[in-house]
Length: 294
Image (cartoon, rainbow, N blue to C red; front, side):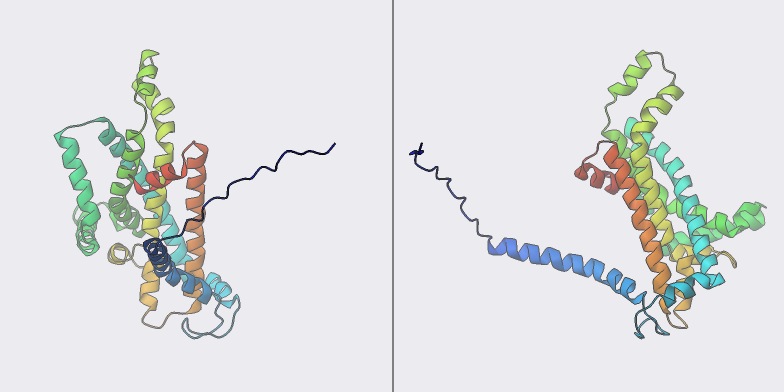
C-alpha cells in the first residue's frame, strides 16, 4: 500500500550572520589569549632545546631535562621551593580559613577593618613587604633570640604565608557566604556542640574553598622572587632566586626544562582542586567563582 500523504517539510533555520562587532571581539579575545600564553608556550618549546644557551636552538632533545635533574644545585633549589610552598599553603590555609569563616559569619566595624587590612596586603608593593619582613626576621633572630627566624625554610614559609593569607581568606569567605546557614542551625537544634557543628557541617562545606585557597597560596609561593630573594639564606635558596641569579651567566635550557616541570605540577594541582569542586556539586561557573574568591 502506497502512502499518499504529502512529505513533511521541515522549515530550515535562518542562518544568523555574525556582526562585525562580534567578529572583532572574537579576534580580540584570541589575541589576548595568544598574548598571555605565547611566552609560556615558548618556554615549553625551548625546554627541548639541545643547545648550550636557551636562546640558541641546537636541535630537539631531552638533554635539558636530564641535565637539570642531575645537577644538585638545581635539585636543592626546587626542593626548597616545594618545601616552602607546601608549608606556606598549609599555614595560610589554616589562618586564612579561620579568618574567612569569621568574616562570612560576623558583620561589624572590626570585620570591615580586617577586610581593609587584608586588602592592603594585596596592593602593597612586594619590595616594601620584603624589606619589612627582612628587618623583622633579623630582629627576632638576633635581638629576641628566636632561632626559628634564622632558619631559611622557616623564613620562606612565614613570609609567603603572610602574603597569601589574604587570598585564602577572601576565597573561603566567598565560599562560606554562599552556604545555607540553616544547616548549622539544624545541627544546633540537634544539640551538637560548636566544635561538632564546625567539624561535621561547616568544615566539609568549606573544604573546597580551603583547597582552592591552599592551591593559590602554593602557586604564589612557587613564583615569588622579590620577597624570597630578601629573606632567603645561603643553602636555602628557592627556585626563583636561583633563576634570577642565573641571568648573569645566561639562561640555559635546563632552566626552561625545570620550569616546565613545575608548570605541569601546578596544572596537576589545579586539576585536582577542580575535580574536588566538581564532585562537590559545583558547576563550572561556581568553580571559577570559588577560585577567584568572588
